[in-house]
Every structure is written in C-alpha cells, then in structure tokens.
Image (cartoon, rainbow, N blue to C red; front, side, top):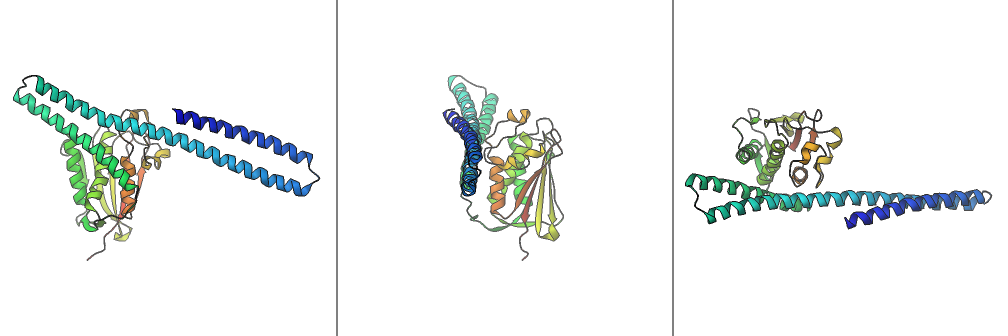
Length: 298
C-alpha cells in the first residue's frame, strides 16, 4: 500500500510538472517570437522535458501495475501454501486425538496425500518459474515422441482431479511425431496446460488434445482445447505474462499463482517453439496451440 501511495504521488507530480512546463514554455515562446534561435532552442528544450515526463509517467504506471501483480501473487501463493497445510494439520490432529475407523483413516490419508501433492506442486511451480527467468539452455537434448509426455501428463491430471477415463481425449497421427529437448520440461508444459484447462472448466471438464504435423513436417503442433470460461481477445497475449490472472469474475474465484502459463511459454521458447491462445469469446472455451520444431530424422 505504501509503494502504491508513493507511485501515485509521483504520478500526480509528473502530470503537474507537465502542465507547468506547457504553460511556461508557451508563454516564453509568445514573448520571444522575434528571437528565432531562442525559439528553436526553447522548442527543443520543451520537447525534451515533455518526453522525459511522459516516460516517467509511463514508468510509474507500469510500476503500479507490477506492484499490484506482485501483491496478488503473494496472496495467491500464501493461500496455495496455507490451505493444504491447514488441511493436513486438521486431519493429523483428528487422528491423534481420537480413534478413527480403518475406512475413515484410509480416507484421511488419501486427502492428506492430495493436499501434500498440491503443496509440492505449488512449490515446484514457483521454483521452476524462478529457474525459467535465467533462460538457460535445456540440459537434456533427447529425441522425444511428443505423445509420451502428453499421455503421462494426462494421467497425472486425471488422478489429481479424479476425472473419468475419457475426460481427457488425445488424438494423434498414425506415425509418432518427434521433437528434441528435455522430457521432464516438456511434460511440465502439458501438466500446466491440462491443469489450467481443468481448473477453468467448472461446468464441463472435457479436454481435447490433438497432435499433428505442420509446415511440411518441419513443425509439430499440439492443440489443447477446453470447454471452459473462454477468453476475451485482449487477453490472448497477457495470460502468458508472469503473475497475470484473467480478469473475468469467474476466473478470480479460481486459485492460482499466475505462474503456470508464464512457465509454459518460457519452456516452449527455450525449446525453439511458439505458443498462442485462441478463443471464440467468453464462455466458449479456450484453445492453446503449442508448436515445436520437429526433430531431425535419423
């Protein structure tokens, strides 16, 4: 809050200085019309002042937005860490304080394991996003059948959200398509994409994944489509920014760190690929297209 007040103060100061500079320079120019050289110098000086003030104002506005995003990120991470810890503690205290039937105890253990997985996933996501900022080259450079990490990611998400067997449908060509890279990072890409697809599909959790070759076999395209809340066109690029959360009211109720898609884009770019979002509008689902360079044939 203190940072925001300081930023607002400097923003108002910048606007006031801009207004004063305009008034002073216009008056000065009117009084010195006959002095052409001084007029030119005054115009240049005026332009420099205005440019500096505009840049200062833009910087302050960006800082305000960045500060708000950081605060939202901290609140989200705090919630994502605190909630499973509190849940695990509650069940442990219950188990310690009284006798629990074996069936009930097994249910408690399952819930605690899910909460610990959620906790671990949040910590790993923050660490991965931190490492992604270094933009280093991937350490592993293996030839990967793209369908393998996608299938493994689908199995994890199906178990995490207790989905039915056909809720994540994967369509792939008859011949396997290969890319080069780090298998663990490629799996991380699709873990995050499928996790998002499920979280932002509160009514119908049916996810379609389609794999196909493109650009004459030089690229591998993967489409991940959900039936969820959809996106406004203005957010197609913003959702890949660090800490960014969709502004839709329904999306605000969905907890997250705002790092998942940022991490996805970082990994995809590191592997020489591209990613973009598509949607027909709010309430009409979202499609994420991931395009990787195809691995060279042996």
